[in-house]
Length: 335
Image 1 (tube, rainbow, N blue to C red):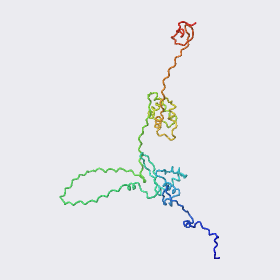
Image 2 (image 1 turned 45 degrees about the vertical axis):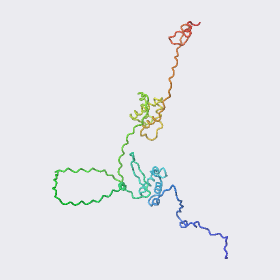
Image 3 (image 1 turned 180 degrees about the vertical axis):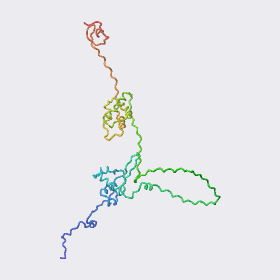
Image 4 (image 1 turned 90 degrees about the horizontal axis):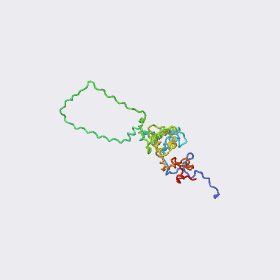
């Protein structure tokens, strides 16, 4: 009984033996972390474990913070990226904006267009008003030097008081100019300035600007609106494009071919400047001039058959020749 049996099986080991982490946590999530060296973003637990944000808002905030600068973060781009609809994504964006993780500002570009700029904040804080932000970005003014006391002067003879004249009826003070007040944190944007008119591109001109050719070109341009209502041209645009169409017609291009080159394969969206599109096509697709062909020699004249006055044989000759070739050569008819 004092000897041990070496062939007895040892006790079965638990799955938690040798792993102190698993032995301490018996339920809940267990992390198996791997250190990231590339393609990662640092996101604070204040966003990931926010007690007031919805799960969609938390996930959307993490996705926006992982995007590079300049990527699309509007409702249309996010709806195309995720299966959620625009209503849920718009609600999640409003949640992030209310808790300081997102800020959307309307700015004006150099061309006068107003766009919405989305700013993602990885550390939310109190939002400053535009006037406070501009005052904070302004450099501090230098402190004014303390005033020096004036040196005391010995009392001298007092000067007599200067006479003053008063008007019996002084003019009323000017009314203050009313200032425009705006309600809300942002001032109302100023109306955009009208863009300067851009001239139409140049078009080719014919070598011989015949009036009949220019009139035919103007009629062709006027009829383009029957093929597409978007090609309705003004009188000024028609007069500018007519020499270009005349240059095509001068190069042996039929009016149907010119009409097909101008009115076919147009874009589906509305045309903002149809005259500029037609001017570009007239210049970019101008065909080369036709090859030179020498004028063909006219065929010899074919005279009618007539009978000789001497031998009564038929021959071809002008009306001024009364006899056939043989009678004119021999001088006598052949018997």
